[in-house]
Image (tube, helix red, strand yellow):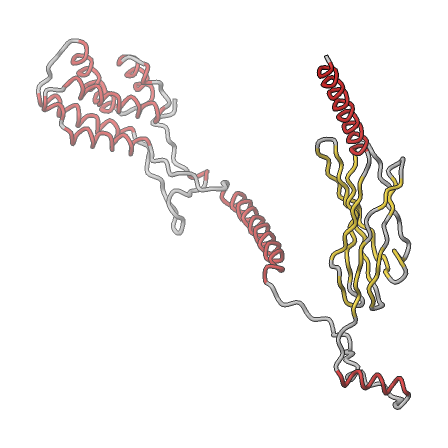
Length: 356
């Protein structure tokens, strides 16, 4: 039983120590820490250094940094105080607050701890040093300074003192990309002027000729019909026993020609209806008879399985040419010095075969 009691006591002591460590660690974690650094640690007179205060604290803390109106310590002047950089990770906030400092006295400065306030306690940073050195002078310059100090000379030779006048402002080198915006402005103005010119040209052209762009040339109905007849004639399909196809294509050319020439819906009419309409529109009896021969023969071939003689096929083709040439619109009469196709509206030929 003695050993067991000792073992239990040791466990109790270990647990107490662990609880104390946890309590101390939690208290330390809740308290802010601050570290001061300076870069560079050595400067020449008039040069600048950067003092950085790094604070690590819980994210809910509000840190107050010291504000220096002129000097951090005698001899070290504060030029600017930069805004803090803040990062938060795992509920821990890290702040870096920077002071830009300089000095005009050559010596080794010792900066004591810098205090910060976290809303509850004042926490001090570590101390640091800043060495300020003078520029190295030549022996002749040191000797000249000694002469001035002893009053052996009244004048001051700046060259012997290694003091140079302020250099004049240099003119920046020419870089063509700096003026690229001028090129874009000129290009934009040129495009706008070009667009305006095109619009003016189109408006004047519309006013003079009645259209902006020249309309496509549309051949007269008889020209296109004769071209289709020439193509059909060159194939000679009626000589290959394909009379039904021949007459179907032949009558289709004539029906479409009649529709375009007179506006008669010949594509939907029977042969008899087409002949009745043609009778009303033409005084040329032979044109009516030619069309009648073609349509009659075509109906026999397509509906009565009639096999026409070769001469009848040739006659149908010849009559188709005759019908189109007899009913075509007259060729335009051009005046001297006036190009074809641009006659005045009052001199245009009558496109109808006969006034209805």
